[in-house]
Length: 147
View 1 (spheres, rainbow, N blue to C red):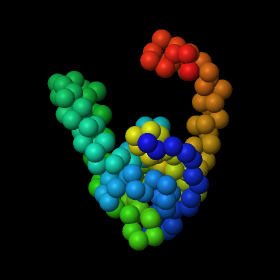
View 2 (cartoon, rainbow, N blue to C red):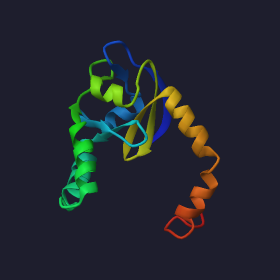
View 3 (cartoon, rainbow, N blue to C red):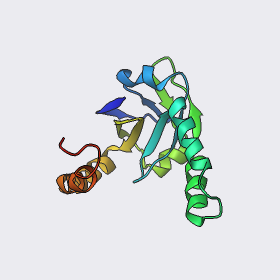
């Protein structure tokens, strides 16, 4: 499971260090794609295959399903770490997530997220205030009630 928040810089060639604590679980190859809220999602291959199966099951007759799968898969690329533990992020994905220099790598259970540092800070600030309200909505009636 991926957990934690790490600050790193992306260089002019689009290379970003993946924290050492995530590298083994990520594996020798993994998938990077557009995430939600203008971040990037990074999936180990086993997790990617599970998501791929779920998305293939969506009805192609539904406009939203077609739009989501187009955006999600068209931005995806299989990547590997170099000997220094860096991943090269392509121009299109860097532009999508507004990655300039300072980045945040988050461990979010089954995936990593890569955020522009300012975007992450803004998102965190906006979401932090409603954290307890969100927990009531999502957790009180579900399997995590009584946390």
